[in-house]
Length: 195
Image 1 (spheres, helix red, strand yellow):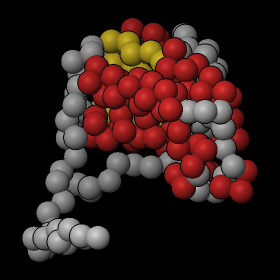
Image 2 (tube, rainbow, N blue to C red):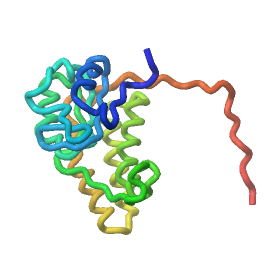
Image 3 (cartoon, rainbow, N blue to C red):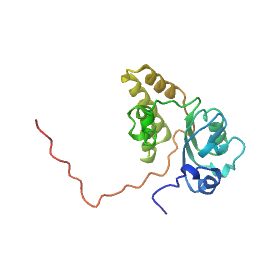
Image 4 (tube, one colour):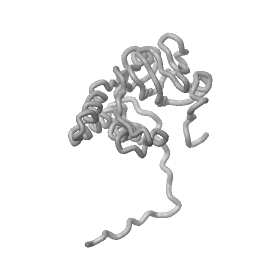
């Protein structure tokens, strides 16, 4: 048993690897292109499509898709076919980014305003919070970031994402908590700096 989940990136973000690994997990996180009834991986390869997957792939799982419009038809279909909970978006997912930072969006201060609420929500799930608690953390992140945002485009993107976020299924569902990684030594914080 490994400490990391199966990760499919680039050429591996296709249906066949997904089908082999999905039944082994209690959580599916997908970040890719989507539409009302499909979720895609690399080069628009369809990974999940309404009516074209085995319910065994999603049964008993919490599913989060950071993908446009999958909350309209695909999300409800996943829950109807056994997913415990689904989190996604009923419309496009929007963010503004610095094109020079496309290869490392986590370091992009513009993209972080939209993406960090999602990251915070995912960390809450991994730390043992319920789907509702994690979902509320994401919504609160959009609200907090929009409240202090001066750029009207960024503010409207944050509000749009918040208003199109959806949680379906069992709100009390939880995934296996990630194991703590103990440090080989005790961390002692540095003394405060007095100026």
